[in-house]
Image 1: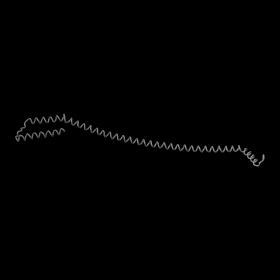
Image 2: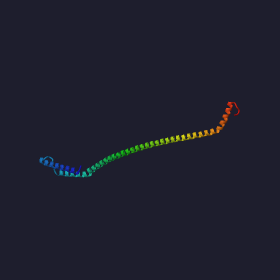
Image 3: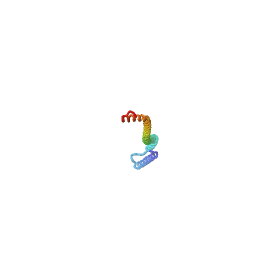
Image 4: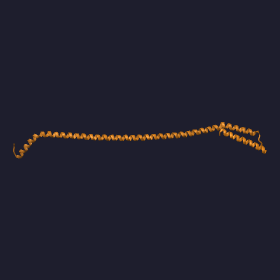
Length: 171
């Protein structure tokens, strides 16, 4: 209740008091208005001002402060909740990015390993082909050397065989 409201209430009370005094004197009722009514009005007005300053304003200030704190705490909680949701969203986004990056790196490592394996297989095939070619050429050389070595023996064996077939001892 503001001071203007108190003033309006006081004015209304005084007017009512004065009107009732005039009505009482006009009607000459049993109740007579005297100085005690004015003293009571003064005491009432003084008590309104005193109670307003000592009780109502501090009480209203406490209620207003409490409401500000409550509303402030609720707003702070909402702000913190929004901040937490933003942080969780950022965390999930980064986690998904990290997972995607790890998956891409894993796939790249697989591709590299597959390429390396294919290169090793190709190199092994080439080396095996070279070894086979070398072995064939060595075998052909050895066959040639063996043929040259056994060529004189073949002639001697052929003569002996021909003599045996012909039944002669010497040619």
